[in-house]
Length: 171
Image (cartoon, rainbow, N blue to C red):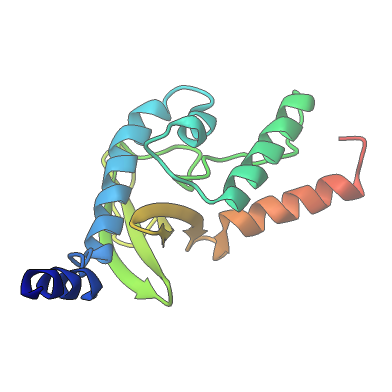
């Protein structure tokens, strides 16, 4: 009976899992993404390939908005009706490398600043800040914030472009 009670106590004890260092995981995930993405960005359609690659997790809202923008762009060749820059680099002429420089908690998410270097003007301010949430222990990219020139963010820009297209349905 004593063995049974000991086993029962073990079973009903709260199971503790090692804490995940979410800030470190967010930073490392962003670093791996940019190490993969920057070489891929040399070819057209890299942003859509990133959405389909199972290594990278994007929020459903981000995937949906990027797919809608891509479809509108494909349907209107020769016209700018969607993004006219790389959504993950915040650039038309990207740097050679991009790396995270800082990470900070923002509510339930983490903001990971990313700075480009090499082949571009030297700078210290982030080119883009990646907002990372966690679904369980899986890091998910939920938005990309653009600190310059206009303090925009990818979801906001995509929403505005969709609104502009809706106002001018000929595009």
